[in-house]
Image 1: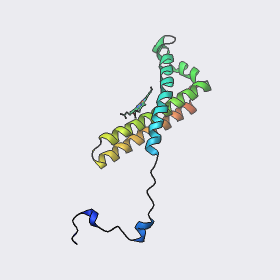
Image 2: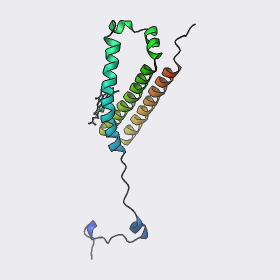
Image 3: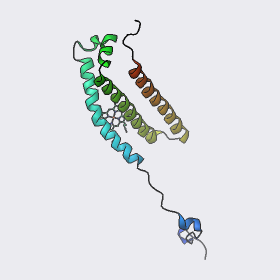
Image 4: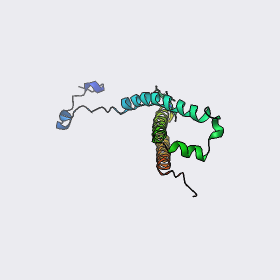
Length: 142
Ligand code: HEM
């Protein structure tokens, strides 16, 4: 009988085909979607609080100088606040941009290099920011 369409072909009989298990689906995209929702909710609180303190209280932006930053980072509370905000904003923003790159980059090469650039900038931001927070020395120059 002549083969007229792909459905006319006999089912594959090789042992390899018969043993193959269904591919396990990864939950990565589901988890990263959930992460965007949860980190977004935490960021509302962290970012609005940050803007309120930095831009409204005590004379607004004019009060921000080295001494003000040194005073805040003397407290573990603000260190944890700023560290959490840094990590969440970087990972949330980076993961959001990953989605946008996946949606809009047409060529495989473009998509790949944009993600390399994104990863490098995320790692730099998180590593330099964390390093600054933990090694900040209020007595610099003394
Ligand atoms: C302030 C509170 C924030 C909330 C409540 C929030 C919430 C969200 C949510 C729920 C999504 C997922 C949308 C979806 O997949 O349907 C999202 C996406 C995104 N967020 Fe945020 N976010 C916040 C802050 C930020 C910040 C600080 C950045 C950047 C550093 C950022 C950058 C992005 C980007 C780039 C996307 C991807 C947009 C897209 O897929 O088209 N967001 N945000």
